[in-house]
Length: 383
Image (cartoon, rainbow, N blue to C red; front, side, top):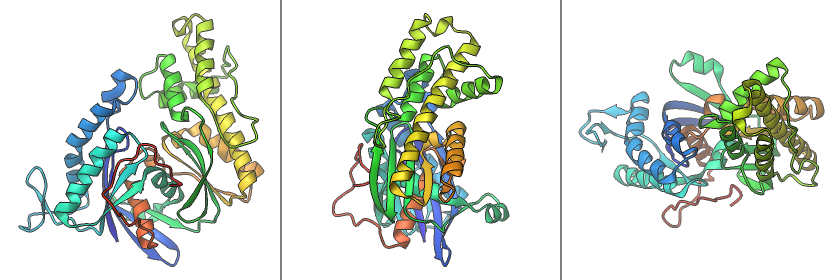
């Protein structure tokens, strides 16, 4: 089975063609072709994503990304029959489904992907399915890179989804989301913890901006924190660990951002800090976030008796958070399997949307659309 997937939930334009087959061990995926274009540099001047600009860029980039993905998949043809691309090239579009992210995300950018996918489905005669962005993160985090076959098949990545022990607890952390999701059976989700205000990725970016770091600030802040950790530099300020002892799995980061702002003001502003002090403050912030996520994960694992734990989303690429969680689980929950997502697809991408669609299709769990797709900015994975 083969799916062409489209992802435009924020500022990455992604198109991927992925093939999957079900076998005795589970499901294997082969990425036939994938294209991804980030708009981060374009939005840097705004310090964040400007939705209408992102929408226009998606509309401009989608035809280009489609052709690039098809080219990599060797699916372009000169046959007189087939789908005509904007530049006149022709493809037969040999796929079983077209899948597109329909939420959650920024509604203007979601619509750009949905409209493009609907036109593509209409012209090619292929069925269209909407996929939850967060389910894409969760499924792709459970899948493992098949390093052996990926090495043999040059320029192709292969993933395997097998031996997943339920219940699964997922920590989904990104620029727009921070939530604990419990999956007791496939495709049945319960959100057992959520952010009460800001997502962890947003907090990283905002504090990075306070420190004068370029957008996207999260990775820059982490690099500075790593430098301070390696040199043993301690911060001039101790930040609060919000909600770390509350009797639930919810988190809050708005107050942490405010505390960081006040701490920098008390020093007369970031302009009065040395580079070492900036690095040490970045370390304190990252340590604070890690402390909270580790504490809440401990509580969630204790309450749910999950046998598998995964993290997904852009912030899942943060090496310090990954290492802290991995250490805690190895020491305190040795019977829980910790699955880390492949770094190349922790951020928003179309491969994860294709994987989610393929798993659903192979398990006969694809949603049956009763009406045209619509963009839902705050769509819950538990909907």
